[in-house]
Length: 490
Ligand SMILES: NC(=O)c1ccc[n+]([C@@H]2O[C@H](COP(=O)([O-])OP(=O)(O)OC[C@H]3O[C@@H](n4cnc5c(N)ncnc54)[C@H](OP(=O)(O)O)[C@@H]3O)[C@@H](O)[C@H]2O)c1
Image (cartoon, rainbow, N blue to C red; front, side, top):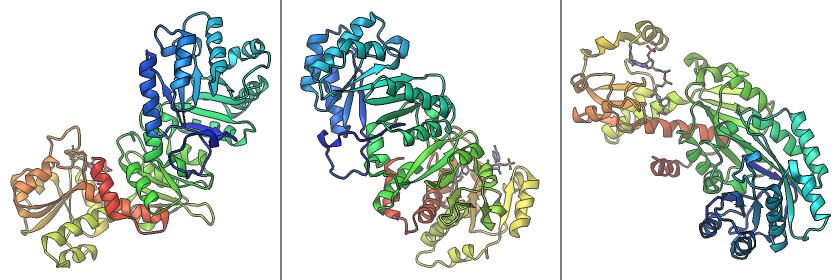
């Protein structure tokens, strides 16, 4: 994640949208082998809404400083930051360091807005300019750690060393080995007395769902970056892996549409307990839980809703504003019931008799599982009967039954699998599959071919998202908008 604190001059930037709730600038890195390609990328950066471009001179082939810098500065549609990263600091430049620093000095003289100088050579660089620099230019002194994120004290010491060079802006980039590493950089950032860029790199840094950094488009469109303020409440989905999750798309769009001051992040978490203990401030207010952390989530709650306790897993956790306690819920079952009820209503025309029957638990429940003991335990809990998966094949005490698959059989990548034979499906009038990747599982395809109505796993996903969004925001979820966002993202 990239964060920039401190009083930067937002006023002299090209803003496409007047409303901002923070002064943090979004910088798009430009890495190309030719000046022409860079100019194209700079145009794109402006189009997507970046505030400035970081021109990575070390990527240019046949770089000719006087000519190229003049063109880049003159034709840039956005304020410019010049970086000429040497190999010893993780960049591409392998040549003489004096020449490298000469180019940065030249960029400064030709009208760059920012230049980036590595901490290791910052003193030399400042000595070489003898305090003479154009008023406009700001010098960022940077330090990169590609191995790890040091302790808060060590990061604090580093900031002090950078400040001592005379830097206008401090930049610290570290590597996240765990999502909790970002918290240490947050801690230093919030206490920084100078403008500071804190960058935690890697898949586990927190905000990103893929290695590296979020795109400008994702920052602006998915995370509503301009609307994030000091009072924005943080939510997210805790899982591992998490990159595939559609939830950030659904929740962020919903929050924006109902004007709710919250953000919802994909959180790649190894240890739920470490995560919950680290991010314990009142800003972190709500989480969804997905595979494999629903049971671990339960153990981190201060209080558990009776239904979640009965199920033995949470998929929703909320920090109670009055006392900060974490309350765990399970709303998966509400999503599944709502989806099946809707399916039954559609099947029975306007009558919702069957749906209400289900809601009132008047339905006869039969649990089939490959592990019979587990089926028996669940059946005993809900007052139903248990059978084995093999018995399910010839199980048809009556016609017009509802089948709900809540196993992962048939889920991507094993889409050729199905939990029950096509022959056995003819006894069902409605088949629901909790799986939503793919939408059309083999089970649902065969159910439709057998004449049954089908209910997609996406309906459960949507219905439980509606409940969670209402729990997080306190207002009704914009259901149609969320449906549309899911349709656009599948
Ligand atoms: N649509 C939604 O919103 C939503 C929400 C949550 C979950 N889901 C989906 O629901 C499915 C189950 O999720 P979960 O978290 O409940 O998973 P889970 O706790 O791992 O449950 C898996 C169940 O599937 C059974 N199972 C697994 N592999 C099997 C196999 N090869 N043959 C027969 N049975 C098998 C297990 O039987 P044993 O007890 O014998 O191990 C267990 O009962 C997943 O596909 C998940 O994506 C969807």
